Length: 238
Image 1 (cartoon, rainbow, N blue to C red):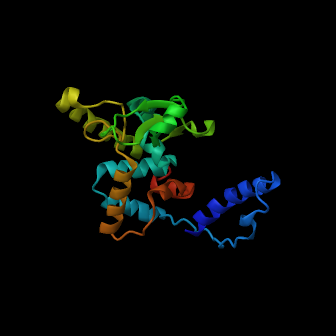
Image 2 (cartoon, rainbow, N blue to C red):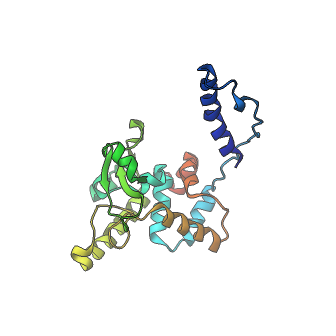
Image 3 (cartoon, helix red, strand yellow):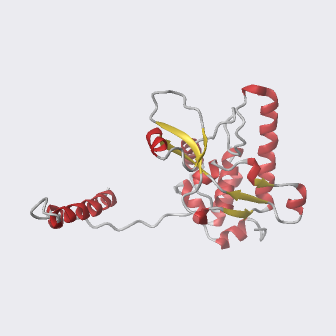
């Protein structure tokens, strides 16, 4: 798109400008290029009423949990999928006293194997097994890019209850599968314990929108909904 063209032109022009200063080329050819104008579109978000309606019609309990975590905790999808049970406090005492929380200290990402080799595994906490040795990328849990991303987020009772149901369901599956369950402690895990993956959440969210004729928004937009909407959705419990 137009933004991509502008993003490429900027650093390329700077490189050629430096080359011209060094005498490697006579002049900077990118300097005369006509760059298309780009006006960023405002990201659409759901109102509190629409989000509440989406919660009511959503029959996919895992998607509902993902939506409410992203919304109430302002989580990026990588932080959401990277959340582990050891970073969750939904004990009865914590919920009753209004101090249930999740702790964000890592994120899920798919990265190239070459990048991991170059960094000698720096910042990589967990590397998940690949389905194929031919795949050039691998799924990992890694530390956040910035220290400011590490944070404790207090969650409302409604989300605590959703997390408790998710944990109970996982415990049943683990008991049934035994050693076949690959337990990485992931909250948003597949039936065999592996991280759910961003594609799965995006597809399930798009399906919810299509089947219920909801305004089209991207999953990432849920973290941008205002505090006012959060208060209304959770009846002041935030």
